[in-house]
Image 1 (tube, rainbow, N blue to C red):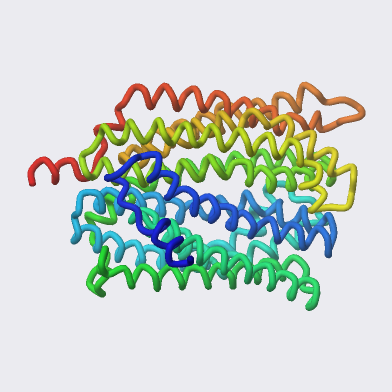
Image 2: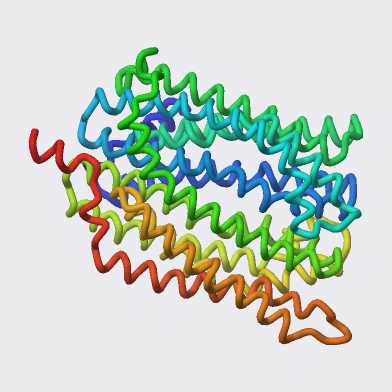
Length: 467
């Protein structure tokens, strides 16, 4: 049975066959994998919320924006690698494919070393800059420092899993992630409940588990000799290839940096409210991660699908697959959104025993509901454009929606709703602004996709035409 499942969800050549079937086969393990990835943070939050307290839960969540900001380097490498690998795989350019994979491994190690050095040094200044409340400040810093010191696991898994997905393999990264997730749960309970390490315990558990998943991905990649060979010579950085990968990855990294900076600015606003709002917001973001999961999943699937078919010079299949991907994304995100609205209070009760926080969190979640459907449009079409090599357009859309739209609206509503009962304003501003930015982002992305400039960004276009 396991063999049949592995063959069905094995390496996918999406330049052939029915687009809908290929996308489903690729997306199902990817969706389950995203679920397991989300469980990392969710289990951490549940364990500290239930066994340590609401302040510990707030400490883990408050560190999120700073962590995401310093992870943008990995996001850029992963995006650039996925695009290049998928296009070279589709174009059957084996030498460039091998060199890209080898250089990606080297860049992963080098970027990890940078973050291991820089991360701990800037943690305390950044946490102070965003007005982290005194009662959760030290725990937040401790959590971040431990995560940064073990960042090689997080970087290794996310980047190498991106390479495997570019080759059409979304099944084995899922297997490794599930193993690591189960290990993370066991270690969380051991370190927090048995050893009493508190917030530091969940950070150590996460770091160890991520290293395990990264090692498995590396072993898998080195054994895919029928698809790609990674000789020692490919690990030597090549200037032209690194520049190309950087040119592709930097816009995605910048987009993530913009999002993270905006999140830090909004987190600073969030920290002006009382601790119950901060804790409720953390819970909402955890549940939000599950609601957003189909959108990110189909966006990633569309990047690989688009990249492989652009590389194979099959633009007609790109358009056909885009329609299939949008249908899948809209249906799944709609169903999941309804389920979260129905079972939202139960889900939020997993994180805390405080009814006030559960009620507040569900109220905030209800504001965002329609936005998840809009985000399925943004992520799906952005995935198509990225797969074609156009990473600049999604970057600018991210800038507009987060910096130009969300942040000013959030602060504006907070300012206009200040009162003696709510001196910092109405906390609904945090989610009304997010909803508006999502809706407008979907409209802008659709317009950019229809204009079609992304069609001329293929990396392999020259090589194919002159072959």
